[in-house]
Length: 192
Length: 423
Image (cartoon, rainbow over all chains, first blue to last red; front, side, top):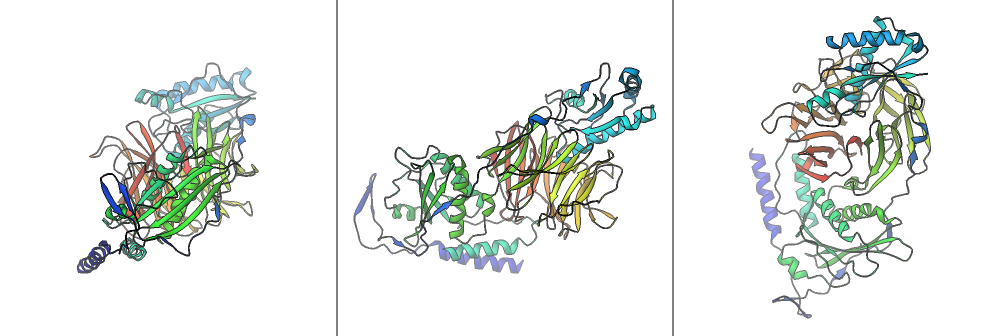
């Protein structure tokens, strides 16, 4: 503490000493009127050797734009008729008991002969409460949980691909608990 | 006066050996600078007043100046002699005059004069140019950097750096945008589809990594000037470039080739990757720590997201944070880590994301924010500032915390919902 006090005292002295400016003002080279006051002009301004009037480019170059809209990911993905989305609790990726029957119904639809040639794309989604990478990982773990459950229900593991959309694919944009619960889900798409 | 500033800065930095310790510093003698806009005439720059505001913002954010009558827009004749007596009576130390106009070649010209009021001198005069007038924020930042350099104050060169961020524009659709640190200048560099997690590939900021959702999440390296795009990797599930080593030769990726998010080290020269974490839950957000042989990352191995560290070549994992039940994002600079902690209730309001900073070399925890949702923390390249996004009462702002000065500044955001940010 003593050390801090002495440094503080030195600093105070330094600051106090320097706070009083002792600039000499020469002559009266002309009074400049400003409002109801009259000021005395300064001595002639002197230049220093640091003057540099060479133009300085701000250094910002042109930037190109890449447009990815011609190669979108989902050109050929289709929705599954009759398939239900699976919903999750906040910050969880384990399958809820009340979602088991929906998963079984989905598994039966996936086994249907007319769907058997398709790959099943399992999309994990999250609400807006996560941040950054963790939310994308949480969405992926949800998709993985559903995939593992579908494997136990007899769906070929090689028919399924996983992707996480994090919080980028909300179906409800309100800032309510009900809305957030609708966004914590896994969707299914058909890929040829 | 420069000596005085140097003394103040020296003492400031002497106390700030460990940035996790908050030291309250009060300096009444920080130099006062006045700014005058001398842009008059038919070709004067139409954004001259915005230029003025940017200068005020820069000089305040530097924490090395106080701005004289910063709530006023001061105009004057660029060629006229300054009213030295007025300024001396107001304890003003420096006067910055500028004149901004568009010349016949449509080039933005900004002429500046810096007067040292105490020494009665014109300290310097400089002329800045920019071929695109929309880039005037970078000209303003360069002017501020030069004023700061005149005082030999600690560098604020980071103001000249780009920020890159992704913002959602629709469901499964986001754009990658390059901006100045105040977001006054913005340029979309990638659009169409879902393009996320942009990260600068090198310190000169001509290339960046980003993930594009094609058939599978795919990582690209993009040169923002030539448009050249190189595919780096692809993965099922998710793929993120989380951090880039200082020399740019190694990057940390979060990948999930079998539906399992883990952290991988990718050598950009040899194109070889190495799995760094092997946990059955979630491991994400790897950041180089203490050089590049060690990483910090987010894991849910305790049942909730928290901050951990491990050596790249060893299996042992160390828990770094022992408070909070939802610490889900982090950024590292050398031995310092800043992280977000979701707090359900505190004395200020019911739900918050706050920022905290720790060091691997001490046990201190420094709380950096108190209210609102504070997310996406990122250290500046010199480690002296932290960039973050604050949401509070339905308003969003980009925040900058100046660690050595205990100050933070907010710039209102008008860009929509951000996905991630890097600088």
